[in-house]
Length: 136
Image 1 (tube, rainbow, N blue to C red):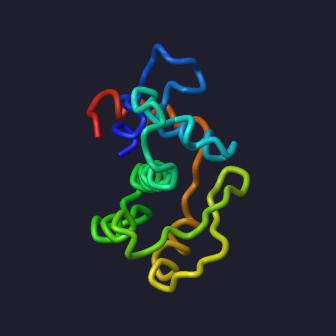
Image 2: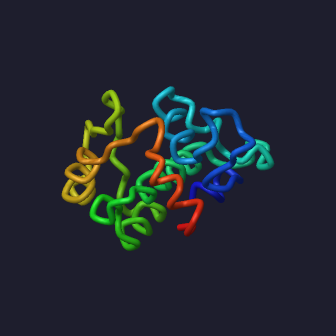
């Protein structure tokens, strides 16, 4: 999802140091309140901002290395179809927390999962090597 929405590969060595790893870059921009700045510039802003933001946030959730912390395909479809609202997510230092879950369907899954997710600004070398050597 992130590769399509951002128009980039997961690792781009020619980018500036803070933009080399796609997941870290999108996460940092999200923390800064500028997640839409990571969207593919070739789109020219021709998208609904709330939909792009949803895709980018879901892309981050789907990028977690621990399968138990990622939403299922069924949940993704529910989020994308608008059947279930993605809860408002805030960043607390290096981890993600949630606030204001007004949707019972999402709170049963997302709240415990998101509170356990850690978003670091720089992945470990083994994560980067793993992506480079074997792909996703």
